[in-house]
Image (cartoon, rainbow, N blue to C red; front, side, top):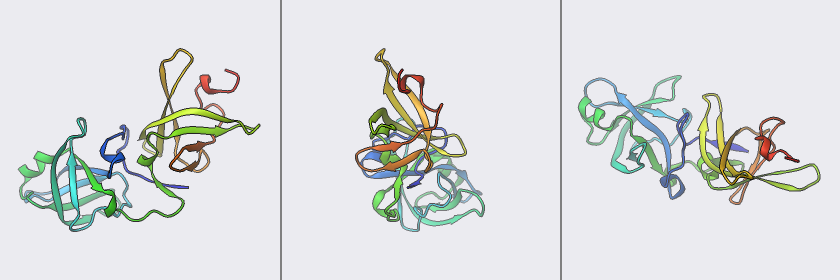
Length: 205
């Protein structure tokens, strides 16, 4: 089970776009030089989403509103870094780059590479129930994935559940094969190690 990264480090990734046809692949980092070349920070340095001719949907990071759309005329990766230098349609000066700096870059799903049978996009888990199978075969509900984030070293599912008080609480689980066993269109199956779950979710609590 392999995931494909689609969101920025340390931030929630729940957006209407990501659940209705587009995926976030990075954000506009700033200008390179004075002629409008733009530096793009990618969430996945190995991504093949950015290609010549692809339309980039630039979205406000807080409001999620579409600010503008730009066709990618030219792109090249900076060796060893998840950063690309790009020429965008209509962006021909440093000032034009500054006007879009910080905007999230989204692309339509149909321009992304096909997934292998054991792959999934992290954002596709948002909204799915999270469960684990106990030793006696009982299935325990552990909440719902509400966001994807990262600690800088690994991607994390942010999971929300409601305790006995009725208040919403959240916990995190690394998206690695030993912890996340399966993701399909119905649920996320996990096997969290001892001590990772909130006390309220431990059996007998």
